[in-house]
Length: 331
Image 1 (cartoon, rainbow, N blue to C red):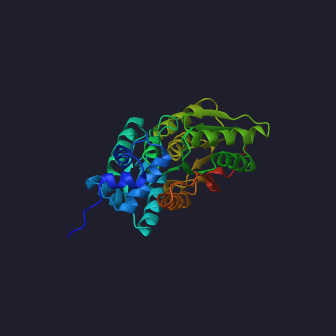
Image 2: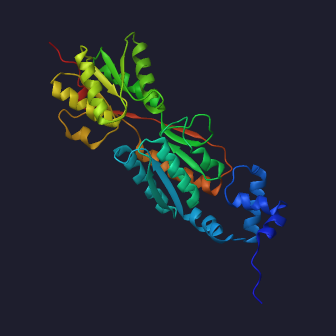
């Protein structure tokens, strides 16, 4: 005689809860007490219960697929980071689902809803907005999440990012050491912590030397970097500029070259273009390879043991000096 398959009632009896509670846990409801959720999951494992398609997803799809969500498919930094994640994920038996939010909170919310339906094992994400992101819905459904580059305000979640205040501080040290004395900074939106922290570190580094920084803002795209840099040059011009985002850095370089003026440029991230143009461009490099590998390893650990407390890891950036910050022009 074929043994009868365990039912949802068997799980409920084993966990000491109602069948409705078991159903809510299986379907990822956020309203179930954490201890009850733990008991139900333990009972599911103990009884071997497989709840049709949902059970198949819980046992198979969650154990083999992770998602990586980035805000910009054209940003080399994010694509390089994804490559490192994929290497580690494959080594741990996971396939990678890739999605891009196009820096749009609404698109990001749609992606999160889709991931909830797919029952992925975990998610590595670069959120669009640190205050309005819906990433918390994944955490409520007990799906492990590791954030990269940008944090989530007021929500305890694992995060691996560069020490961006230190990046700005190193930028100030480098430019001051090269003899520049009229600094400017092209920052991103004030709501975006990585670029804001870089600006803060940069301004602070110059303030400690009694020098004020001219701060202008762009929207993280090449065109805005070009436009803002033109405005800075038109207003009399700094003798050096630190740009807190890689794509704005490329736009600023174009504006400086078109103006044919000697302005020291320190960019963010070591993109290929920075090594190929003339003059070659100095950069503050984020350790994207280390970031991607650590994020993937941390996510695998959280999938295996989701009860550990979240952590924030800060990685140290590095200044790579090239021709664009050789020093101010002498007359």
